[in-house]
Length: 573
Image (cartoon, rainbow, N blue to C red):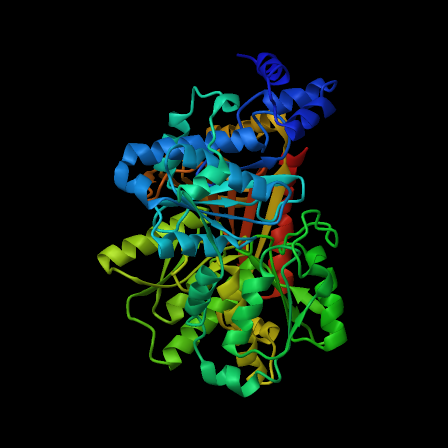
């Protein structure tokens, strides 16, 4: 069936949801918009699904949410009665339709006799991960579009370990619904589910249990006690879900000088004070910087709308604030965790940090100094969660820190996804550590560069939307594979790693296998120690280019980054 036939089926459907019908009517005369809404089903990958809200099979709406949940229900049934009996935990953020999508999910699951545990109000993604483990449900659903703008929403599925769904289960879920019409999926009555005990509200009991675990994240309690009256922190949840738990976590840890931003404390689906609710972007810190200057704050901390990512601004000598990159935050946290745990004689000999293949190599240099291992995984925190699970089984390593360059960090594995709540607390402790020495976290970063070399990284995203964009992204990746460059910006390519076919190509023409899961990623290693990685985004219509380099000083490192940006810019034309 072509997209026009699918559109007609929606247009003429009986009892179409009024909001969906209104969205459909709003684009009825725009063929390009209709084609984009109906030319394909919204992709359900290992990160779940995320997209624009609106009518159509390529949009987030109650019907696509029902379809994904129907697939989840059938997958659980395929795993047997024990999976069904354990039920599903459901959380949601403050975006438009998030509560509605959460309830639709519960009603689809309830129609299969599967019990759901639904939070009483908006909650962060990491708490959903924790709730799956704590309540021992078989799986979990998080309704969120993370740091995307207000037009988006999303749907993420978690496994029983609290990590995001495995690629195998994601493929199986999709296979269960490949021939299902989303308009025909039956749902149960919510009041009847409550009466039958198949819908349970959860809230502060799980909050408190989660916060009890967060209290264990701090390492040096004495430092916090000594300077808690001196170290000053501005915190913003960016009008998302973080305020409730982060505020309580700071209080429990003993931080007394935390300033909260009145205009951004409460969830707001329109993100009215923000150009973009993304802590990767300096503009997200506009209010935090104003509060910081007014209160002479040492650090600014921002969590994204579902509080799984954390960004940081650090005070500079001139009183201004510098927004750190995710890689710089990762390096600071690596240095602090290993230093503090070494001093406390609490660093196991088999300790390891786990990071993604597109993240900085600086933490690996730090871990080498501490005789600690570093393991690389594919992009996606689920792969870090898989390593943690594996270490628990084998005892081969003890996990002490995990991170991705995209501002995702995990300190203690009672959660199996990025956790900005526990990371905010530990970064506050890190700020206290430097405050006691009369320094700032920026001073700490400079010390790291002086010790290990000046590492610099940059991520460049090329947005290619719609059907044509998807085709262009595929063409870029296939072109790079079929005609691999022998040099980039005049510098020889020494090695290429193709994670799609798990092969490493050496300059002498030989090949080696790569022991890692397959993914559509290419990584080029150059003669000057620079690396460049290329991958399509799994959640947005973008292709991403990552550049990492190391030089004697900042100026030289930035020059090298600029040198390679020209290579990337050719793909933006």
